[in-house]
Each structure stands twice: as structure tokens, then as C-alpha cells.
Length: 387
Ligand SMILES: *Cc1c(COP(=O)(O)O)cnc(C)c1O
Image (cartoon, rainbow, N blue to C red; front, side, top):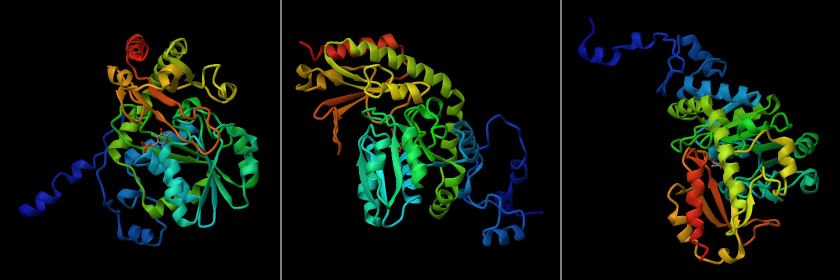
């Protein structure tokens, strides 16, 4: 008979291990994972244990989400991280060492740029920024010590598209790691591995989880590039929250349905804005007016719900608060991919030639609201700029 304090510690353990066959994976909360026997622990001490040895090695929900993503992307393996920028940082660290050089497309997510200039530089890795619409002429920028090329296509603020297969081909020929941040298209609308890319990154914070309540990132690689990446992840003992992986897996189940709706509403709003007299350019890859529209048509299977526009000269040089603050359905805030519509606005800087230099770029995340209501909201808002 056990004493009370022992009962408090051991109670329910046997029942908890029952194998209950639910549709969704169980949610483990664990640092310690128990070995079946001492021999297994000895194997682990020698780095030879095949199973899960600790909470950082990947619990059920994380493993399930990673497996689902790898299958979806046609990748060798996928690993989840606590945020998109975490995933990006891990990739940049995994494939570089002191003395290496990396090439980064100029239109990348701001924190990706800052990680290169502010962190990699401390460890002797230099970065140059490529024209955002770079293609086969990437060769001109490669140095002997170039190890990695980082693409974001389209860029999530200004939507320039790179010639991804052409860049991937040059990288393969030269043994350079090609990486793409594929958050905008998701694996449904662009498959980087079919185009010859080595490493694909998702901010699952966006469409995959889809509800603006989770931060999560993924990295998927080819078989050839996996071992080097995995070693780095082991050293950092990176992992993702089980609850967040669970929600991301749930998000995958409805991704195609949500994305279709985002796509159609965004196209509707984009076309409507094109004809609006306050608007100068609508920047959306699926519009024929987009500078790399032909590349989009060639490589992508669809467009998502994020695009931008600029204002006509007359409206550019005004305080835009009246417009933005009057919007009822568009929240003023960062991030995107969720069910609620959002707006961001501001001027951006680039290292290379920039088509929207000095222009305020308004970026819209088109959510799942009724599209006519969204247009009405923008109409009354833009009216504040035209007197
Ligand atoms: C948001 C975003 C990220 C970063 O993702 P977090 O999960 O917010 O860290 C990376 N790349 C792109 C293109 C993004 O839009």
C-alpha cells in the first residue's frame, strides 16, 4: 500500500498511457521523456538512441505537424520553430560559418535583413543585397565564398518576384544553398522543391495557423541539405510549442478552403482599387500590370490575400491618418494571413533600384469578411483623401 504523498505523485499514470485513437494527435506537456530501460539511456548517452529522449526532441503534435508539412511540400524533412524569424535565423546559422558570404534579396522581410546585418556580421559572415527581381544574372553577384542565396518571392511588402528556377539552377551548379521564404504563396501556390530550391521556409504564423493567435515557423529541406541543418538544430535544441503545432496542424486541414477565399477577395479588391482615382499603382502579382506577372504565371498556382497599393501624387503628399483611422474593418497592425483584414502603411528603403522610392506603400491583408463590405470600407476611407 502506498502512502499518500506517493499516491499524489503516481496517481493516474497507468490510465494516462492508454492508447486512445483520436483523429487529432495527443498534446504532450513534457520536458522529461521516460526511457523504457537503462540500456536505452545508455544508447542515448552514446548518441545512438533512435527514439524521443527529451521534450526538445519532438513530441507527438510537433512530429505530426512536421510530417504533414514535409509531405505537403514534397520535402525530405520539415522542422517547426517557435516563430518564422526563428526558422529563418536557424537556416542562416546552419549553413554558414566565419568567412562565408550570403546573398539576400532586397525585398526580404525586414527582420531577415536585420539578422544578417546585425547578427551574422558579428560572426564574420558578410551579406550583400540582390535586386528584388533577380534572375539568372545572379551569377554576377556570386563570390568564391558565397554559401547561400536567400529569396523571398514575392517579397511580402513590395511583391517583386524572382526567377526562382533560374536562381536555383545556378546555385545547384555552384554548390550554393538556395533558400526561399515561401510564406506568401504557401506550399499550395508555389512548390519550391519542384523548382529546384534546397530549403523552404514558412512563417506558419500567417496562413497556416490563420487566426492571428500563434507564432510558428517551419523549415523544410531536400535530403542532401538535411544533415547539416539538423546538426545545427540539435546544438540549439530548438523546438516548437506543442499547442502551437497542434493548432498549425488544425490550420492545415482548412488551408485550401481559406486560401481560395483570401485569393478571390484580394483579386476583387485589387481590381476595384485599380480604377480608384486616389490610387496610383496596385501591386499584385496576379495583375497583368505587375512587372513580373509573367514569372508569376509561369511558376505559381495561385495568389494569396496580401498585396499593396500606392496613392496618386496629389494624395501622396498628405497626412494619411484620416484615411487609415477611418477604416472600420481593416485593423492597423503587422502580420497577415489571418481571417481579419489588416492594413500597414509607410515608406520603405532598399539597397538597389527601388520602383516605389519615396512612395507610401499601403499593404492590405484581405481577410474573410464579405468582400463588398471591405470595398465599401476602403471607399469611405479613400474619400477622406479626395476633397
Ligand atoms: C511574418 C513573416 C516572417 C516572420 O514570421 P514570424 O512568425 O512573425 O516570426 C517571415 N517571413 C515573412 C515573409 C513574413 O511575412
